Length: 156
Image 1: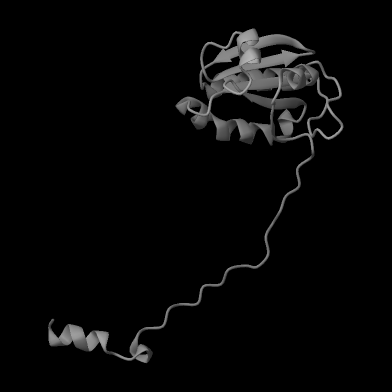
Image 2: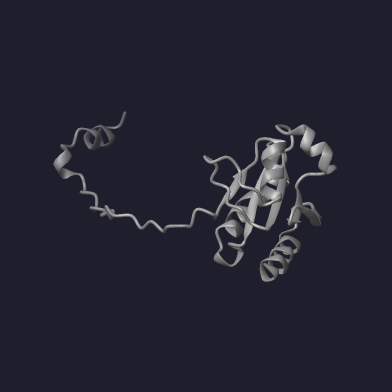
């Protein structure tokens, strides 16, 4: 070991340069969103049908009653599903789409519903209006999904 290196290690702490003080604000800005915004994960076939048919779900449910719903059929192992998920959440929190229920199902957790809906590829997005399937978009295609959202939000 060289003597200059050893001398640097042996310096007292007071000779080291002080670090800058970094101030971090202690307050946080929270924005409130209405209870009807956000993406809701559907866990059963019965819950799905009650949501798309604009029925009251269980009293402890946070899913509001709306006439239009967009369903994201995804799988946890699906790369494109993971890629589009943040955009789907972003749309669900936009005020202009507040008249639409954003729901999603994991096709592996609700296989009977996935089969009944005819899901053959992931992600698949379906728009339901008054309980009837109005539109289907296969694949992670943000422009097509946004076009459908704009169309049904304007109609609601």
